[in-house]
Length: 397
Image (cartoon, rainbow, N blue to C red; front, side, top):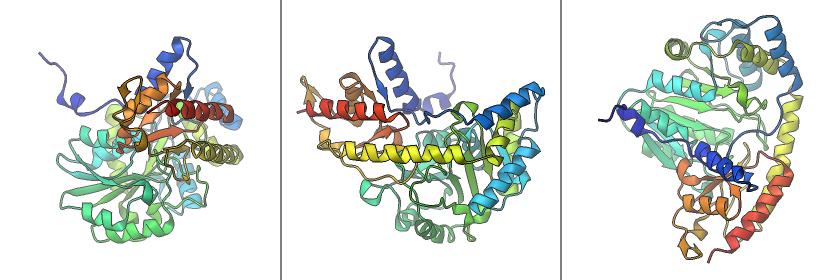
């Protein structure tokens, strides 16, 4: 007899986690693997943020906090959103959660009923579709190819909208492609949304600071849609605080209150210590973040030049985040020692086992012809990875 709920079978384990696990298993046997599978900055949390956490512990700030976050932090987020993004959210329209993923899940739980459609541009972050399916919603995908810099058009958006469309979920800068929507591109999408007031826009802006081409633009700044945008953000990527696990959402008050209500029943507030660290992050110097972004920009150039030396790989130049999403369809159908590479997943496993480089199949992100490469590691390791990839791929015939 099967004792598990049906929802368990409706979702899949994130391939990012699965590939990282496979890499660790291979490393445990003594193999030197360059791990380019996880989206995690390889920098240390800035000292002033760690000092604030230590001070919180020493001052015994170790008790439960309000579910939506301490007032000091919610005020700091409100100020940050206004000054840096031009977004007007009061403190009571902000909910602090255990990571941006938690904030997105809160939002989907608050909005989506069975059968509701959520429009998701592809490629997309692995968990978007699974979250929607957990709530018995229907993911509706819009394919954005390499030739469009992995960004959808207004015409594609209009064609995807139906009477069941309830939400639109996207990220800019994007995981897995590194693509960033410009103000002009967002304006074209907004013109479509203006005609469909039933759609709530969920804007994942966790990679906001890692933008190489100009100032980040939040879709919530557009007057036509500002009252139905949920802005998602957090500290993990921009402040090198992945293990601290703090994200937040800013939303119209009714949605924010619904998310707080939901969160109160299944997690309550996030860590009191992390919240104090977050206040220091948001009110302190951005210099460590800026230095980190400069390092990522240098690494992007290193990877761009390196990947361009590998015959068969097609790439664009991503403008944000720390990923490349190369098209590897040239290698599908090729063989090594009589074994055919049929899928992007096959190629991923081949590069892990033969090239000792770990990355993630594009199938996990909604594109069967691509791989996601994270360059959130040292220049030295990236150089080694490029060499290993070139050598391993050259063996395929």
